[in-house]
Length: 133
Image 1: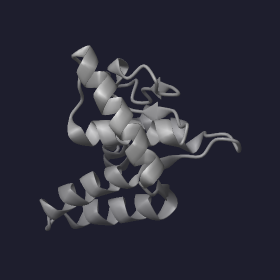
Image 2 (image 1 turned 30 degrees about the vertical axis):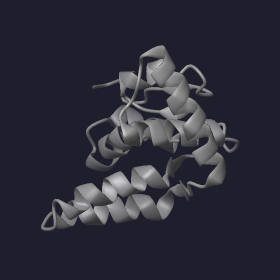
Image 3 (image 1 turned 90 degrees about the horizontal axis):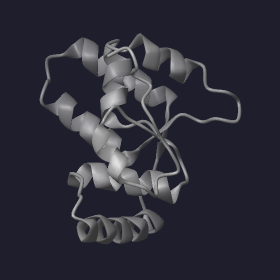
Image 4 (image 1 turned 45 degrees about the vertical axis):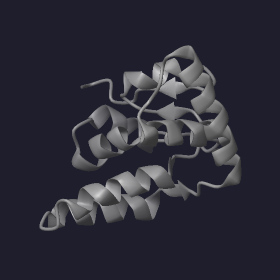
């Protein structure tokens, strides 16, 4: 499950390493994003209405990647995750916590350049594909 920052690096071409990693996924691996990530991306597009090239690139990316819905199982995992993180004194931003819960609920490795996810011990895994940044 690719986080918003890595999607941005891929779409804008800022991380050739992340692009190569996505293109090189094996048949048993599926690249996907959360609907939460799509919402963050669409917010960014709304803030840049005249960036036609970016709009086209994002729509092309979204047309090729699997976007997973966020539902009741994810909500249950989110509630537990938030309570656990708050009890430990470590929290994430709200949208990051929603994305982490989504990855946990679907048993997906989270792909992000954001070190804040290192506090989430219950993630099935966390990888940084943007190793060239």
